[in-house]
Length: 102
Image (cartoon, rainbow, N blue to C red; front, side):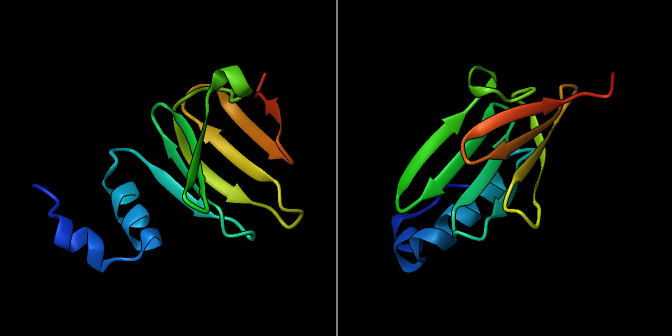
């Protein structure tokens, strides 16, 4: 994909622009939770976008692996984060817990 021109960016809402840019990230996955936060999984960790603010989470924060491949929100509102080679991480109210196969 080529250059993104500013007129195109201004014609989109902030949310549409984020979703479009997130889709351009190689290997990324995204999920919008029940509170309206946009979660973007990338090869470098997990990004949360809400109200124009961005937060990034990595293994230092509790992710099993920084390569996030899958996102899912369960009925209780917990975010399940599948990673490449590191297991699954569950995020509940800012608390990370990791589940492994072994």
